[in-house]
Structure formats: C-alpha cells, structure tokens
Image 1 (cartoon, rainbow over the protein chains, first blue to last red):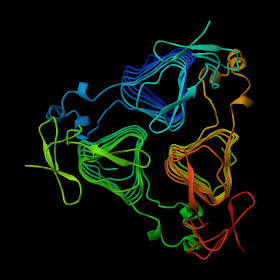
Image 2: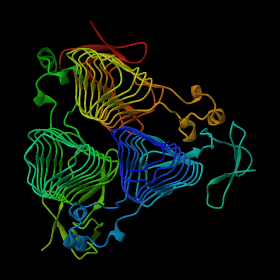
Image 3: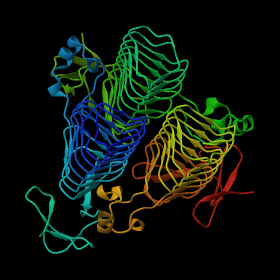
Image 4: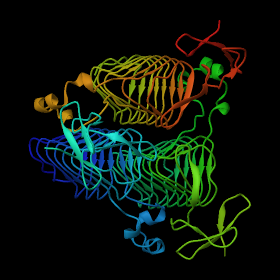
Length: 205
Length: 205
Length: 205
C-alpha cells in the first residue's frame, strides 16, 4: 500500500486501502478493509477492524478491538472505545451470508436487513458498547460503557444501560452539565448550552 | 496442515486441525485448536477462536472475535455474531486452570465446573452475546445483541436482555412472527408455525 | 527480550517487557506493553492486551481477549475471564488522546479523568465483564459474566448484572456460601466465614 510518510503502520497490521490520512497511527494486529477511508491524525489501536466502505474522519480514536461494520460513517473527533461494535445486520441468519443466490432469494434483498450507523462529530462511545444497525449518534453525545444502543441519541446526551436510556447531558469537555435557567444548561468549564429543535443541546454563543 | 484445495486459510490464521470441510473460508488472525471439527462452506471471520474438541457444522457463520470454548457443539446453518462468547466454566477460579494436581484436588473434579453449550440448526446469536455454560439454544432461535443467556432457549424463540428473556418468535427467514389462530403463528413470508410439546415452534406443513 | 527459559511465548505474541516471571505461558497474538510486570506461573491466553505500567501477580489467568488498561494492578491467583475490560478513562473524548498540548489544556490534567483499577488476591472476573475506572475488587470476590462493575466489590461477594449488584457470597473454592448462624456463612467444602469490618467476609480459623 502507498501511504503518506507520516502514517505509521505496525508490522502486524493488515491495511488493504491506500486511503489513510497523514499522521495516522495504526497499531498491532489491526485489519482495515479495501475501500475504507481513514482520515488524518487518527489513532487506530490493537485488533481494530475497519471493514470495507467505512468512512472514518480526522482525529478519531478507535480503541482496542473496536469493530466498525461495512458502511459505517464516523465523523471527525469521535472517540470509539475499546470493544465497541457497530454491526449492520438487523436480523442475521447464516446461509445468506455466503452469497448463494437461492438463499438470498429466500431471505429477500439486502436492503431489508442491512443498515449502517453514523457517529457524529465529537461523540464518545464507551467500552464494549453495541450500536444497533441504522442508528445515528449525534454530536458530542456520550454512550456509557456496556450500553446497548437501540435508538438514535441526540447531541450532548449521556445514555447508559441495556437498552440505553438518557440520564443526563455532557459538555464538549466530557463533564456532566447542570441545569441553569429554563431550557438551559451549563458546565463547570464555562460553556453554556440551549435546547435545539431536534431535542439535543447546542452551545450558546 | 492438510486441507481440501477449496479451503482458504489466511496467511495469519493459526489452524491446528486437518478437519476442515471443503469450501470453508478462514480469515485473518483466526485460531482453531487441535481436535476441532469445522464443516463445509463455513465462514470464519477475523480473530475467531475455535478451541479444541469443538464441533462446528456446515454453512456456519462465525463472525469477528466469536470465541467458541472447548467442547461446544454448533449445528448446521448457525449464525454466531461478532464477539459472541461461549465459555464453559461455571465458577472460575484461577490456580486450578494451571492443572496443578493439588489445586485440582482442592476444587474438586472438572465435572463439577465444566459444561459446554450447544447451538442447534439455524439459530442466530447476536453481537456480543454471552451463552452461559451447559445451555442449549434450540433450532432457529434468535438471541438479540448484548444478551446474557442464562437458560435454555426453545426453537424459534426471540430473546433479548441481561439476563435474556423471551419477547417474541422468529421465522426461518429472520422476521418476527404474528399470532394467527390459537397456538399458531404466521410470518409475512408465508410460513406457518404451531407450538411443540417442548414449548417451541415448528413449521406447520 | 530476555525471559527465563521456562517462559513460553508464542511466535505471534508481542512482548515488549523483560519482566515476565518463570513458568508463565503467553499464547497467540498477545500484546504486552513496555514497563508491564507479569508474575510467575501465569497463563496469558490468545489476544490478551496488557498495557504499560500494569502489574500482574503470580498464578494469574488472563483468558482470551482480556484487556488490562494502563496502570491496572492484578494481585496473585486472580482469574480474569475472556473479554474482560479494565479501561482507565472516566469520560473519554477523542482529541486529547493524541497528546496535543492545547487539547490537554482544554480538557484539564490527566488526573481529572484517568484512574486505574485493582483486582485483589484470588478474585474471579467473569466473561465480558467491564470494570469501570478507579475501582477495587476485593479478595475472592466473583463478578458474574456480562456484568458492568460501577462500585467497589467487597471480599467474597458475588455480583452480577448491568450495573452489577450483590446477590450472594462465594467461597475460595468458587461455590456459593450458605448462611449458618448470625453474621456467619459456610461452604459445602467445609470452610466457614465471618463478616469483616469492611463489609466483606473472611475465613474463620
């Protein structure tokens, strides 16, 4: 593969795409598929899988054993914790995975059961989280360790549990927000937020 | 190892058994132990572990990082999702794992604490599921992502959660079943099912 | 690396420390970081990660894919099950992981968000368990498969669930304890226990 000089790829990593941005570091036993894009200044830790047709933005952290299924889209500055799963199959059955035409016919077209997910700018996904197919995690949301995400998560939301439910809000800096005046939240770091039309938060300038 | 020509084994995979059926594909960083059997036309994805004395049937999918513990039995057409665990130790303690005779004596014989599990024909196990030792997942059952399975699952049952509980029924094709007349269910795909004596469903001919 | 003759290291394992005790076996695709200490007669299974500045005692079992984050401390005779996670970051955000000084400034010092955990003598951690940062699992405690540990666990306690909660007590031998007289428990193996000031159990001599 032909990568910029500033890309470091561990000797044991398998990288099947040329499309890796400068400054990105790829560690041991990683497997990145063909047609995947990984942006600049990313940190791709041991045993990570990035399947084909995945987009990973800039300054993204993919911790150990994160597994990013075919078609997933990860925006800039996202933190994907160790052991996070992003499967893309709503109701898996075995033989169809083999691509046998009769079997595909039996189960219907892939459109019925394949759906990739998206993680938006600056969001954080905790250790061992599973994000079900076809969901969107909005900017700066935080998903607590061990959660099973079965619904979209709005911006700056903190969700935990199996299945995941909202328990609060988090700042860009990662700390919990406190309510201040009506429909308004603030962080110890000084940032202030207001409710958006989509039900998430946005920084109040 | 001596495999049929139609078996493909990635250069980084460790396969310690000859007993792999034709058409099976084994991907990167897989480790298959000695005395394991893997059937024909299986798909064994990155980082999968198949320990010794495991039986894997035909047309089985083992997704990334599935870990099949010693003695497990997986029938034909099963889908084992990414990160599924099938441990075989009911109450693990450390030193006995080292096989020191005095320690084994202290903890009693292996029969007290080792128990393998079985996944029957056509069942699907979702992402990150843990199947506790000594259980049976009956044909065409489906276990939702992130579940902890602590009891046997009857045929065509859909279970989810930690611990797993039944929330419905699924068809051979993977879709949810709807109740029709008494003790009878039907699928959009046209198949019809009746309750069996074992508390599961079977196709009504 | 320069290890005692009795240390066995699989050809595919990456071991960046000299500090491995005699009799320890390190299996396939393992990655042990620099400055880590691993004691004697340990069993380090496939794909395990031991990050830098980790202490692992003697006769410890680290099952497949266990991931021991920087700074963790594991005492003698501990069993760490397959797929256990010990992350060390309380509220992860992505760019700070890159060590850019302006970003570190923005998020505050590492002391605010880094905290390692400790697993004490003889404890057992079940399959797929996540131990949140900064916790202590006391001697001979047992954490059931699939649990998310969010609080310290006292000695001999059995905890399960997401989040983990206490459901009983376990013996050194791994079996459940039965209450006998007041503040006293006994095991089928003959051992007897009393309540300690810390709220755990200790063997009654």
